[in-house]
Length: 255
Ligand code: ZN
Ligand code: FE
Image (cartoon, rainbow, N blue to C red; front, top):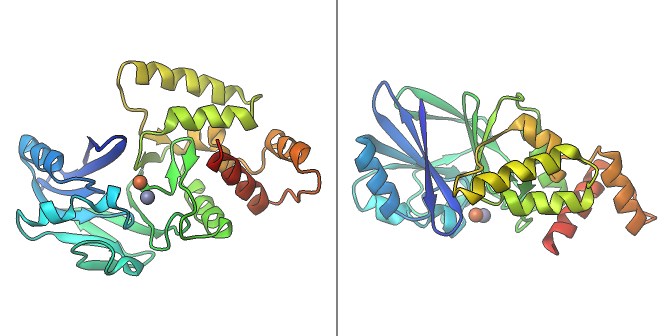
């Protein structure tokens, strides 16, 4: 398996998942068609499928342009029927998707939208706008409970799972992380590393699940430091995992 990261629009990432045995490829979240088609041509692979994580335009905008070149299987959650252009294969949690001889597993992870899925190919997770590197998506169509549940599921994946998310937001996310957990040295170290990469115009995605567990404030509802900081501002607050997550999400919306 080979993963090719394609920068799209301002800060989106699309990905080609290539089966090296058959030379077939699927594209995850094509925000736009042209750069994807150029890359498919350059890599000399046969594009057979689109894997959409959710219906937002910056993740599906390229569907119509890709479909103009010929028929493709288009995957997305069943709740996004009528919202994902050209959807042919509506998905449910636990379904499998095939790219050549590769098999990916579908995880239903609502919260950002009500039809959000992730695709897991071996240890490579394509999680759209649910889990970001050092962040998470906004709650547009879901509740804090749902998002907490979805993130909890992703967190349980093995530490070496590679996190391929939908946007290059790591630097901003870590700046926020430092405001609520300034004593977490792993956060400041990661921010240094990420600034270095960005200064050279390099991607900070993918990360690993191990890094996310240590530094992503949206997965750190057990952190004493975060809980104490929240309680300082909201003395009556109940520090259960969902409330901590919800409060951190609220603070990030205003950051
Ligand atoms: Zn989105
Ligand atoms: Fe997005």
